[in-house]
Image 1: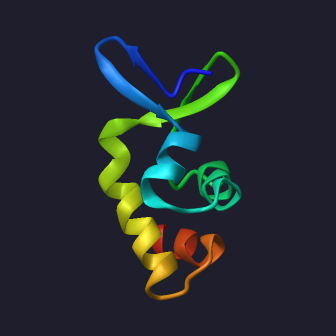
Image 2: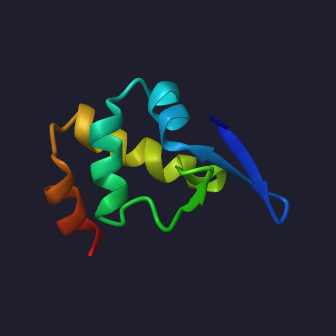
Length: 80
């Protein structure tokens, strides 16, 4: 499994790698991805990857979850 991939010069990281970086459950991160909170991703070798440029966004979403206790559904409502 590749944890990172370059597409047209842009770095993409697997959801597993991002979950490891932020020490969050992959299931929760996948839910956030499925709702569109992390933007569009790419599939590389059957692994979902998101742009490394989205890491600030991921950090914000993780803080909303960890500090304020918000679930993905609530965060999604605020984003709209």
